[in-house]
Each structure stands twice: as structure tokens, then as C-alpha cells.
Image (cartoon, rainbow, N blue to C red):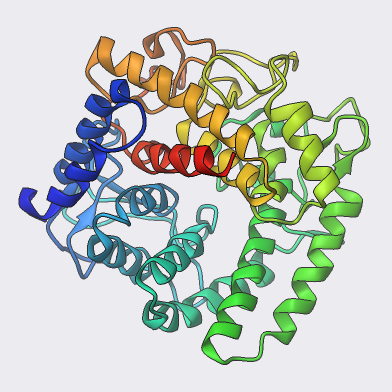
Length: 405
């Protein structure tokens, strides 16, 4: 993509949110342009990398690209469409969509046995809604069904729900590397709250897309209802007002207050009452997740909270998903305050450092002070990192939430 093709994104960035955010948003628009690389296998189109500051070199992230797509979509719908197609280009015949595809060598490298959270249908549906066309959904419908089949064949938990390989092999399929939920857990195919919610999201999209495309969504409707009831009835703790993994929901000894418990709200599997408790008692609770730069990845009350990667610091992508969950259930004021705090601190850190960080200090301190992976050479957040920073989309949402509330 040439710089001129991002003109609309740059123009839009200068109209969004607070005036003090706009230098950062303009930088993000330029960072998108700098992150686009020429087409090469397995991508049929020019592809957008995670960000030029990613410590492991050029890479395409299944999880990360969704945030980039949503960031550029209203201003650059064609670029968004091509990234959705790039994302599915490496889907295997069995339905697996690879996680991170490393592109730093002569040949691309990825795992053919595990992936990342399947949130790409959110981007595909957003494109269809934005362009008022179902053509892309027709292209994506069969890959969606194949991915569902892959999860059912390879990630079905016992006796119900779904799991990620985090619990079996610590391959961090959830995208939450070295998260606290699996520090002291007996391994086994047990239902993980994030995986189960994400597969519910797949079923929910299959139902809506089937209805839009004239297909019979009945089988997916039944599966969605069954999984929704399992999440509501067996993965929610009345004690914490939060969702948990199946092995810990009723066991305080293993129960974690980590941000993954918000996913049933994000995908719409929670009841209205459950969503309200998740938002009011957890996401907006200054003793839990409502940090100076929200949302902290681990509750500040949890004894395992620390200033290390997914064990406390804030990822703007998670604030984005939390805000989407708030909006889904009509809590527009909650969405607005989460977005405002996150954008305020991101802009302040940008003014100080001139870059966008992979993740942020939850207490508003310097990102350089938080740890990444102490046992590796990369022990501080990456700079110029787009994959977890849909800051332009967050600024749009802030304006939308302001209008609603």
C-alpha cells in the first residue's frame, strides 16, 4: 500500500476524540502505512505486520490483524477486506487458522497444530455492515464452518465447553503468554472461560451469517444455546460477580481474577444481570481492574498481580474488547470511561516517548518499567507495536459512547 492510499485514515484520525489524542492517532495512521509489506506466500495481497517494533521480526498475527483491520476499516475498507482474506489464506484443510506466522526468513513459519483466539469473524461482519454487502461473508462462511469443525474436533473439553493448549502444553494458544491461570493447575482438557466464550462467538456468527446468506442456521443455534447455558450456569461465580475457568469457578484456592473472565460479556453469552456485575463490580472496580490505565490484565486484589506482561499490565486491545462488551449490554458510560482513561494515558506516554507500546503500566507509570519475559532477551514491551493497539477505533468508540450516554 502506498502512503497516498492511507490519506483517508490520516484525515479521519485528525477528527477523532480529544485534541490531545490526535498526534498519537496520526502516528498510528502512519504506523499502519509503515507496517504494510508486499504480497508473498502465503498471502495473496500486501499484508500488514504486527508492527515494525515487534521484537521477533516481521510477523503476521491472526489475533493481532483483527485489531488492525478494525482500526482502519471505516477509512480504508478495501485494505481491511484484503487483510481478512490474507488472514484466511493460510487456513488448513482441517480448519485450523494459524496463530502467528513468522515472516523474517525466506520461508514463512507457523504451527500447524495450534492457533489463536478466533475473533476474525468480528472484523468480517464489521466490513459487511460497513459496506452494506454480504459478498465477503459469502466468501468467509465456509472457512468459518471449517474453523468451528476444527475446534469441535480438537478443543472440545470434558464434559462440556472448550479449552486452549495453555492448559496442556503452555503453548499459549489463548494469546495470553505465561498467564496466571495455569501456574498451579492440573493439566487436562478442562473448559477454559476464554476458549468457551470464543467458540460461542463462532456459533453466534454462524447463526447470523447463515440467516443473512439464506442458509439453515438451526444446528448452530442449538449449539450456541447449549454453550451459552453452560457459560451462564456453570462458569459464573456469585461470590466474585465474574466468570472463571471451570476448575476454579467454585474453588477459591485456584480461582483467578484475570481479565479473561470478561469474554462471556464481550461475546454476549452472559445474562443482563451477570454482565452488569462483571462491569460494575470488576471492570469499573478500582480495587480490581479499573486501574489508572484500564483494564489491568489481573485484578489488583489478586496476590499474583505483578508488573509483568499478562500478569498485571494493560493491553489496549483488551480495553477495546471490554468497552465492546459494555456497549453490547447498554453500559455506554462504562465504555466511555474505560476508553477515555486508556487513550489519555496512551497519549501521555506517546508525548513522552514518541512511540506506541505493546502494553502499558496499569498505574500510569512508564511502560519501560514493566517487564515482558524476564527469562528472555526481550524483557520490556515492544515499541511501534500495532497488533494490540486499535487506538483509532477506540477513539471512534469513545465518540459513539458519548453520543449514546
